[in-house]
Every structure is written in C-alpha cells, then in structure tokens.
Amino acid sequence: MPLLTYPAIDWLEGVLCADHRVFEYGMGGSTLWMAERVRSVSSVERDASYAARFPLPSNAHVTIAVCADMLLHAEAGDAYVSAIERAGGPFDVVLIDGHARLSCVGPTHRALTEGGLIFFDNSDKPSYAPALEQLRELGYLRIDFSGTRPLGSLLGCTSVLSRDIAAWLRRASPPPYWGRSISELAWH
Image 1 (spheres, rainbow, N blue to C red):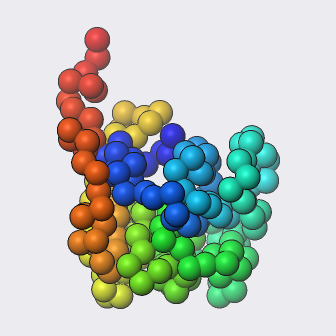
Image 2: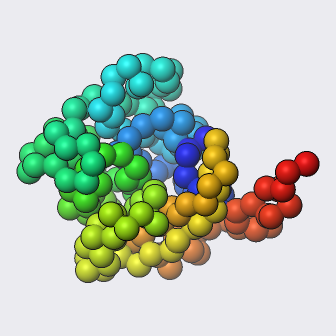
C-alpha cells in the first residue's frame, strides 16, 4: 500500500488508468501498488538497500541517486531532483514523497502532461508550504485528503494538484465514500 492518507489512496484508486505513466520521488509500497494499475512507474530513491527490499515488476524501474540535501532543497542539477528529467516523460501522475521536495516542484511541472496530476504527501507540514504556493502560482488547483495512513494512527494530509482538476474529478470512480469512517478507526 502507498503510505499516503487513506482518502488519497481511495481517490487515486478511482482515477488511475492502465495507460498512465507515473513518476515517484521516493519509492516503496506505492511503487508496487501503482505498478499493478498503470502502464509504467519510474521512481528515484536515495537508499539502495531500501530499494533492494522491493521485488519490482517488469513495468517498474527505480533509479538510485543520492540527494545532496535530504530535507527541503537541493542544488541545481542534483541527481535525485533531476532524475525525472532523465526518466523519459511526460508523466500523467507524479508523486512527490521523497527528499528535497521544494526543489522537485520545477522539474515535476516540466515533466508532467498538460493536465497531469501531482500527489504531494505530508502537505500539512508548514515547511512544504512554499512548494504548494509555487504550484498554485503555476496554475495548479488543489484538493486535500486528510486522514490516517497505513501503519499509522496520526492524522496527516496528502494533496492532489492539477491544472485540469475538473478532468480528474470527472474520471474519478467514487467508492461509497472516500477515506475511512470513524468506526473503522475505533478500538475494538
């Protein structure tokens, strides 16, 4: 499972198509989960030993690249941040859930299809606000999916952004509800 919020996972399940091409900053369970649903998944990961724990299907590829600054920013030309430029885009969906997230916005914007979708995880963290503001200035509309996530009980937020969010909303196959009900979170 992706370690996104449950409402975001549910929404993603309803909008992914078999012909989509996905790029991820940070690989893991989401790589395997999406590879079952899309044409291809390209990821960049900084930790080779972590990446080796995941048996990849034939439609998934992971590039190992050390990120010079693992927190918010990276220098221009950083191998991790620029991996999307070498991955053969354009991409329909990009997941920003790795390192140097503030530096990943520009390359993501350039590598995304015109109406492509960005998933930005942990968007509730104040340190990521400049990235979300930059995307807003580039014309992206945003929907926030707050809730818990697999392997955790703390609340968080995953945002989806697109310059054509209406097309994604029309494509969505809604479940009975997005997310988890409070009864599903109650201790039994």
